[in-house]
Image 1 (cartoon, helix red, strand yellow):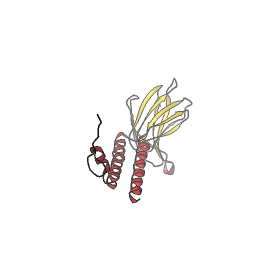
Image 2 (cartoon, helix red, strand yellow; image 1 turned 180 degrees about the vertical axis):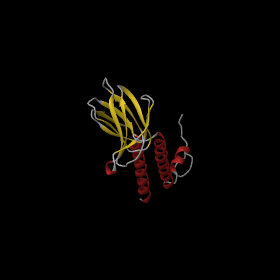
Image 3 (cartoon, rainbow, N blue to C red; image 1 turned 120 degrees about the vertical axis):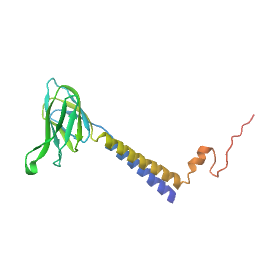
Image 4 (cartoon, rainbow, N blue to C red; image 1 turned 60 degrees about the horizontal axis):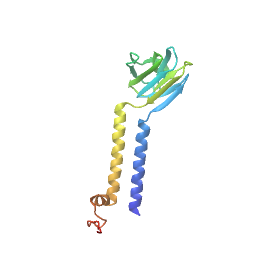
Length: 180
């Protein structure tokens, strides 16, 4: 009974690690006009469905922190500037988003939000974490899953290895009998 509980806990840890990894690296879809959505510290692929450029504001979130955004398609490479004073202060970057699709990267910083106050519809696919963070999340969650698999194997005395070698549970070689 103790082994079954240990295996069940290890399986729950594997499921938790897989779920955490997936939720950290997944992309989110947003769409609408006069829209605000989080970009975090990752990137957004934004499509302006209108015929004219629209003004965009990228703003720091709850913390007053500077950030930097870049977009080769837009010729944009800009650091945020502090706006306001005291408790109402924030950092922001302002630019125009032309019609069509563009990728906007948060090069440094995190907790960044994309804001459009225009009536033109925008669609966006956002990956809220950087590529290096994605790599570390996948390595960490994969390591936890491998550890849990090893733990399960050790708790069951590595019986699966005998099954792969063609041995029964007692360790003797099982042979097939054929009739002619």
